[in-house]
Image (cartoon, rainbow, N blue to C red; front, side, top):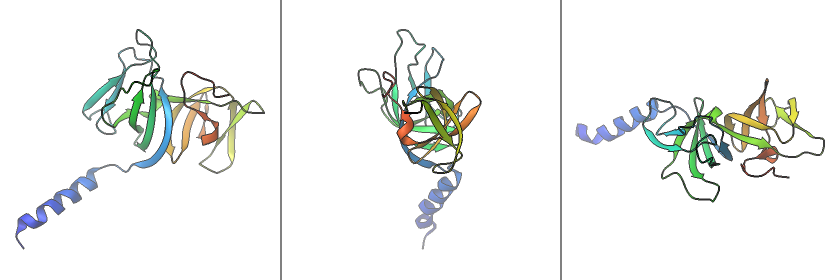
Length: 170
C-alpha cells in the first residue's frame, strides 16, 4: 500500500495521543468569575488554547447572570456546551473550555439545614456545609460535582445542586 494510505491513520493516532483525557459529565452551573472583563472560553483545556468567546460575569456592568451546561472535565478545566443569560438568550456559538473554579453552583435547601460533601461519588460523607451555600466547582464526573466551600472540599450529589443563578431551588 502507498504511504499516503497510512498517513491519515498516523495523524489521527498522534492527535489522540496529544489530547488530554476528558471525564464526561452532565450538569449545570453558573459563572462566578469576579473579573469584570468576563470569563474566557477557550478551544481546549488550558489558557494556551485559542480564545473562542468571553462570557459576561456578575461583576460586569450591567450585571448579568450566566448559566452554563457542563459536559466534561480535563486538567482543571470544564467543557461547556451552552451558556445563557437571565433571559435564556444563548451566549455561546460553540462548545469551549473554562477554568473550573470560575463556575459555581449553590446547595439546595435540605431538611436538616446541612448538605453533605462526599469523598468520591457515592462514597461516605466527609464534611457538611450549610444549605443555600454557593460553592466553586473543582471537577465533575457524571452528574456529581467536586466542589469547594471555605476549607471543605468534596463531591456534591446531583440532588443537592442548584445551578440556577436566580433562585434558591427550594
